Every structure is written in C-alpha cells, then in structure tokens.
Length: 302
Image 1: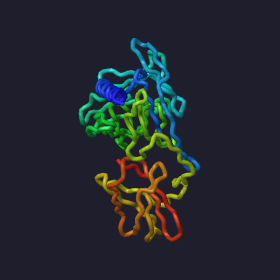
Image 2: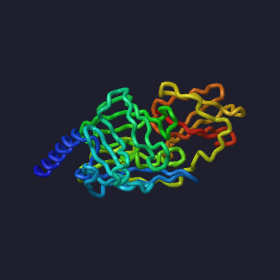
Image 3: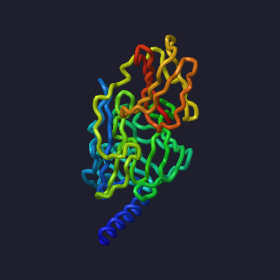
Image 4: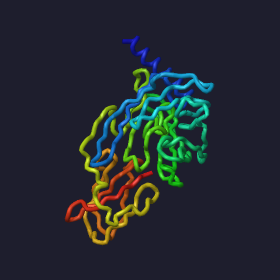
C-alpha cells in the first residue's frame, strides 16, 4: 500500500515538473485526450473520441510528435519551443510552421494561430490574451489563458477559448486541425486528459470521460422570423429582438450538448435576459408562445 502511494505521488510530482517545462504534451508523455464532439444537421449527435500521438519523426531540423487524425481526417507534426507549441501540416519543410499555443504572451498581446488550416484560404486567426489565472486539477496547478479570437476570420474578436498549460484548449486540444467554423456545424469539448494512465484533467461541468448523446432536436430548424440576440451586456445578460407577433411566453436556453440551462417566462415588454450562470459557449435560444416553439436564435456567450 505504501509503495503504491509512493508511486502515485512520484508520478504526480514528475507530471508537475514536466508540465511546468512544456506548454503542450508530446509523444513522450503517453497522453490521451477524450473529446466530445457534436455534429449538427437533421438533429444533433454527440460522441466521445480519443486522441493520442502515433509516434515521432525528425525532420526540418527538429523532432516532432505525430498528431492523431481528427474527425476531419487531418494530421500534423507538433513540437514545443520556448513556451510555444508549433505545428506543421506536412513533411515539406517549405510549408509554414503554425503557432498552436503560446504561453510567452502578456495580457493584451496578439498571436496569429493556425485555425481551420485545410478548409479556408486564411489559415490563421488573431488570438488576443485577455486574462491569465491559475487552476488546480488533480492536485496540479496550471496556468490558464483566456484567449479572445477571430473565429472563422470574421475580422473581429468574436469568440473565447481557454488554453490550459500542459493540457491544451478546453474546446479541442488539436483545435487547429478541427473544423470549427459555422459551416462545419460542429462543436467540441475536451472532457479528459491523462498522461501514462495518470488522470490530470476532467471537465468540471460534465464530470465524465466518455458520453454519447443522440436524438437532440436541432433548434436551428425553427424559423427565425425576426427573433435575434441584439447585444450582450457585460457577459451577464443579453437583449433580445422579438418578432412583431410575439406578446408573451417562455424562453428556453439550450447549450451545445442539448441540455436546457434556463427556462423563464418572458414578455415583449421586457427584452433583457440575465445569464450569470452560463459558461462560455454556443447556445440555442428558443421562444415559445401559445402555439408552441416558434422561433430560435443562436448565441455565443463570451
């Protein structure tokens, strides 16, 4: 028993030292990520996928870990350098090397990271460091960076992503290889990460490493009809633009996994909705009147 406890303590100490020295795991860490991805279409289906490095390679003057293929079939070659994580999408050394993570930034700094590198002409997006704090998972303290970024090259900072040092993005550890723009109709969430069998992260909201969700009705199929989120105020509430025929009814807010987060009565005379309990992410806002669910708007909470 004492020997087992000592072994666990030694593994944790080794992991802490390793994570303090590198921004993102490499093949040597024997890491495994569990990622929940939801695909929207005629309804929404969510399934957990496992990602692991497949090997190493020396090329272009550096050693790289070979990244796993994502759900979209992309692969890449990844290495760490002085607080940054860099990736190549091919073995051709003439091709550019993208930034995926950068922990050398100061608050307010901008870095251009690889995003949707195989899907759109502009293969990088601006990421701005908004905040830095420290979080503790399974006894290990890590820096967490709140990044505001230009999702899908909209030419303004429209989305929030969190980077956890030594683990990766809470959206997807290999987000640069995943299709995350609006046309992809996909949303992902990092559920868990372990290194050589030692668990180092679990999403505090879902509290599971493996789940499958099927049969979610896609609220995007409901007609818009003049219903929209007009603006967000300070991240704690938003304002709505109601259809002309709406008088009163019920407002339902559903997250990307199909969970109903808020249900409240609402009338056309009060268009402000408080949202302090919601985490960052994409939500469907459904407006119901006496005829049933009639309008839907999509909203991203920073």
